[in-house]
Amino acid sequence: MEKIILVVHILAAAAVIGLVLLQHGKGADMGAAFGSGASGSLFGVSGSSNVLSKLTAVFVAIFFVTSLTLAFLASHRTGNGSVVKATTAPATQVSPLPAADTPSVPAPQAPAKENAAKDIPN
Figure 1 (cartoon, rainbow, N blue to C red):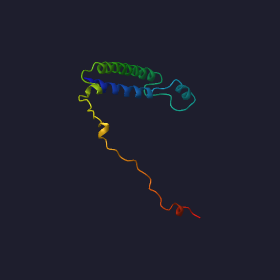
Figure 2: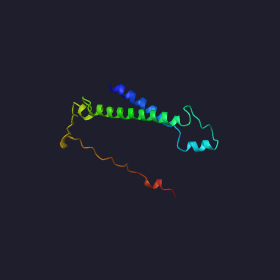
Figure 3: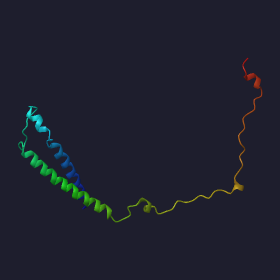
Figure 4: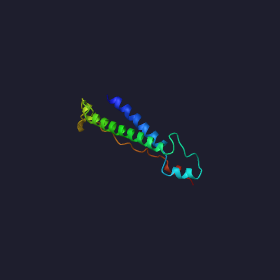
């Protein structure tokens, strides 16, 4: 059921995008009056805005209803939806070694130079 609603939601979104891009803007008629292209369209001069705007309103309503339905279904989903609840085994803890059992490592020392005077150029 949820997948069908999701498909209808995506198709409605694509239809709204397409219908909005097909519609004339309010300033498009002014450009047509001065000869910048054909002012008529497929549905006629005034019919295109009515049909396209009604179709846009229908698809926007479908998009709105499917959005609310998908949100309702997602909020009332049963099951283990949490990542935190999905973990079953706790992490194991490693106990540190006692201080007496740790081996002592001597700090590294710089090697002594035997003839330090030979390294200085004259």
